[in-house]
Image 1 (cartoon, one colour):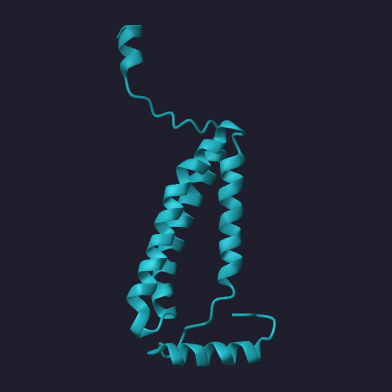
Image 2 (cartoon, rainbow, N blue to C red; image 1 turned 60 degrees about the horizontal axis):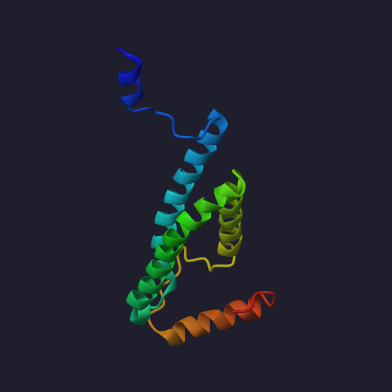
Length: 133
């Protein structure tokens, strides 16, 4: 095989450089995919029946906007190689912390109307005064 033929062969270099970087990137991708599936199912339980399809549509649009923004975050790698990973890591941590404020739905009946949801929110506010809805 000549040098010219070797240059035309496809390579497996992903541009990550270090194995630790590749491992963390793949672990992050796996975590994002798992959380997307879990939150998509969980968000259906948060909306009352009469507006569930509208709420799921809004959630879907918001997730697609995040997908649109991801190449822009990737372009930040031109400024600093680690900047996209820091931005995505911080956004992931922020999303995780904000999800702690979502109500518990285990063994709870799903709200049927907006009035039931407002009543549930009123109970939450009076029980936990530090959380404002």
